[in-house]
Length: 215
Image 1: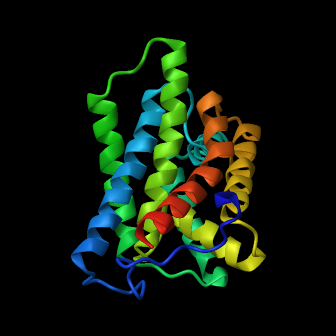
Image 2 (image 1 turned 45 degrees about the horizontal axis):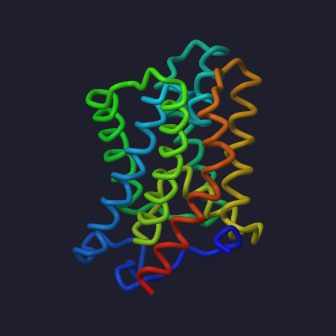
């Protein structure tokens, strides 16, 4: 059933508007908690050594064809995605800002403190768990309705325009991104493919669980 979800659920701690810089404590708490999980999942995917996320593969592929670093390309991609928000009617909020800050911090903490598994089966398990954690975290922070990160905002905007399920929109977006990145020379691993095909259903699952638990 969760694969058919088309809308972000509204619960008791959801903000009534995105432009809310003085949210209730519960709203702010779940925003941060969801983003911490999201960043933890992204970090664990890197630690698993099974491949980077599709958007990182895209950045790597582009950087191989232009004289710019992966970090610079990543920044440019984020700006380009935010520009795409304009025709899609998406709005920035404090969640957009905290998305960049908290996820970056969690990725750094994971890389610093969590050891890389040496066993291949453990690497695979960790990569699967990481995608699930990203999806659950994404579902929690999106329900707070304080603004999405660039990729999630693009997903929401495209869903509204196409009226397709969120899982299908996100999966299609990630598969397209990793395909372009791979074609340009980016390196995609098993973890990358798991993320590309699994993140859509996992985000939908996160939204479904939050809606069920808090409604």
